[in-house]
Length: 117
Image 1 (spheres, rainbow, N blue to C red):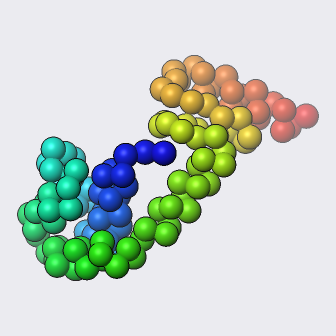
Image 2: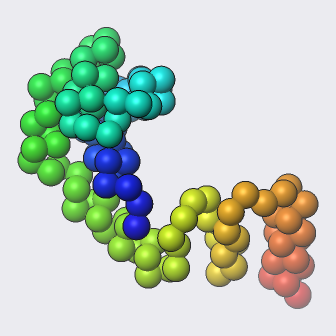
Image 3: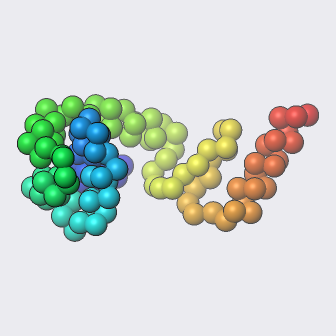
């Protein structure tokens, strides 16, 4: 499931979080989206974020510090039948894809009524 390069970008963002720069790095990833498909691009982006140590990001990626955690998340998603984004669960009801406010409202109201019966 998913694009391996996106997984690596997610992993790099978790490495940035360990340095307290999650949001700063995430923003830089979005601004430089064309560079996220290679390890060198991810490191180049990291070097643009003030206070972020790109060498630590590189080491974190090489060590696979967060790879197991991401793989576990992907395995859990697969077990629940999730193979695309976005997906939402309200109680045990899965909602796939972009849905209207009304769709969510109706389901939530139905589930609230069911739980108060």
